[in-house]
Length: 236
Image (tube, rainbow, N blue to C red; front, top):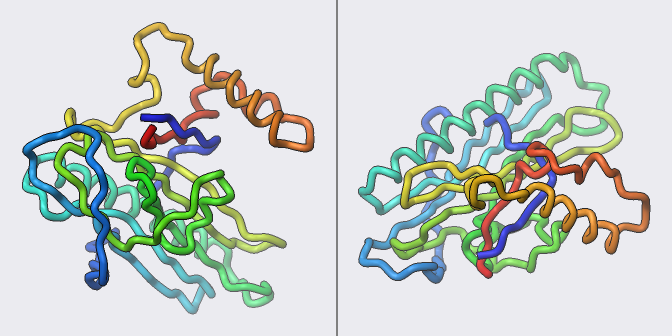
């Protein structure tokens, strides 16, 4: 496994979601560890709402486990659903607080998409992973996992426009351990007392200095938990 890091904050985040129509194809992904557990599917669910009184549209796409009767499946599904409902409520409050936006050049929007970084090559269509250095994905609409897929690493993107000259975006991650049923923190990957933040911060600073043509914002790569709150496990 490799660790992928992004400087972002883990975040806020459906009422009863409506499932998407069954997609025409599926992709079988390799399992990191052999096991006799049954296969299961990770399928996208979507909430789409429009509010003409606020000139606002909302689109949330998020994953749900299907085809698994193990306890972790319901726990994972409920966790992601709660986070999406929190995102929805926050966006609705922001749209309501904006008031009259008829003078804006664009409608207010908020859109959430996700990618499964622990499954090599699987990315939703139209997701701008190239900007993060990721390879172009195959655009699968659903994924079929072997039962031994030990950790599911998800990267979410919220793209939004709340007025102003430009839209914005931010990222957060969810790393779920199917062996323990727990959400992993970055520190869980290292032995107690290991100076992992210092090592990661130094590595990140070196890589950014190689890639950027402007001065590095030193506080943005300081060895603080918040600077590395968005991380994911990817195939080695």
